[in-house]
Length: 192
Image (tube, rainbow, N blue to C red):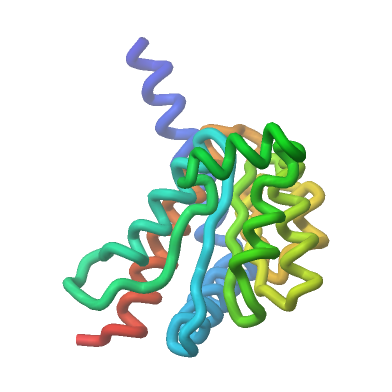
């Protein structure tokens, strides 16, 4: 048992070490911090979407912006698109589960907003559809995926594709990078 625990922790560290050595990925994270900072400063919002554990991560990261990360400061306009269960179940029932995020993107987001989609495979139908709608509206798209990027690779203005095909290790890295982005955006907008 102890060996299994150590192996799992070692796997997680290995993925993060690979990220740390990936200059292109680090540059992408830096670019995302600047894009989100500029969007908030310009009065736009950052919305998140995901499924399952990735929905929990979406809600977690949105709360870091709309609540606080480290600093007591003004709330930033950010939310996770799945939080209205009445809407979610109605659209899934009346249209399709693949339409749940696309309709919200179409109805509530504008050019200048940022949409962050979290999907370990990069192939979640509802997130792919949301990114397709976002692209037609000039909404900035940021994909958090696994190794290949899946279908989101071609639909993302910025892609965080974690160098792993192991879902738990990908999700652990998503929240690490999400926290980095939240911390640096907060510092940029609310210095001191």
